[in-house]
Length: 116
Ligand code: 5GP
Ligand code: ZN
Image (cartoon, rainbow, N blue to C red; front, side):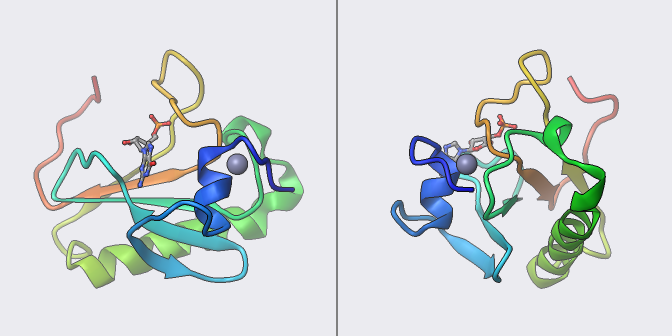
C-alpha cells in the first residue's frame, strides 16, 4: 500500500516534512514546494496509486473524497468564490513528475486556457 521509494508516500507517512493543510485517514493535502499560483496545494491519497490511470471503479469513494478535500481547501484558502483549477497530470507528455496520484489545486490568479 505504501511504497518506500515514493516521495509522496514518505510525505504522507510523515517521514519527510511538508506544509500540511489537511489530513484524514485516507487523504492528505499540503502546499506545493514550487507553487505555480498564489494558492497551490496538492491533494493525495495515503495509499500509493501511481496516477489517475491506475484508479479502479471501486476507488470512486476515494476519488470523490479527494475532490471534496480540494473544494474544502479552496474554501479555506479563500479562492472558492474567485475560482480555481483542479489538475491531475498523467504520464510524460502531461508533465507528471511524481508517480503518486495527486490533484493540484491552483488559484488566486487568473488561469489561461488551454493549458500549455
Ligand atoms: P506533477 O509534475 O507530477 O504533476 O506534480 C508534482 C508536483 O510536486 C510539482 O508541482 C512539484 O513542485 C511538487 N513537488 C515535488 N517535490 C516536492 C516536495 O518534496 N514537496 C512538495 N511539497 N512538493 C513537491
Ligand atoms: Zn506513493
